[in-house]
Length: 125
Image (cartoon, rainbow, N blue to C red):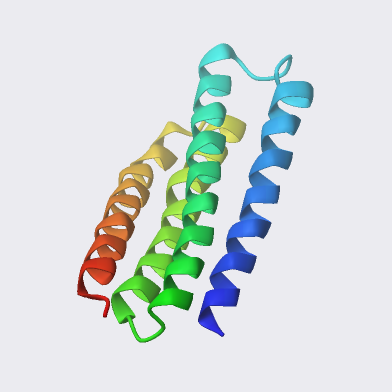
C-alpha cells in the first residue's frame, strides 16, 4: 500500500508544483521583485523535480516492497519538498531572508533521499 501512497503524493505535489509555477508566472511576476521571483522559481523547480522523485519512489517500493531504505527515501524526499521549497516560497512571499536558513536542511534531505533510494535499489533482491 505504501507504493500507492508515494505515487499519489508525488502526483498531487506535482500538480501543486505546476499550479504554483503558473501562479508565479501569471499572478506574481508583476508583484515580486526580480530576486524574489528567482527564489520562487527555484522553489517551484525543485518542488517539481522531487514530486517526480516521489512517483519514482512509489514505483521502486512496488518493485522492492520490503525495502525500508526506499520507504525512508520517500519520506525524506517529502520532507525536503516541505523544508527546501517551502522555505523558499516563504522567503519569496515575505522577504524574510532568515527563513532561508531552513533551505539547506531541505537540500540535505533531498540529497539523503536520493542516496537512500540508491542504497535501497542496490540492496533490493
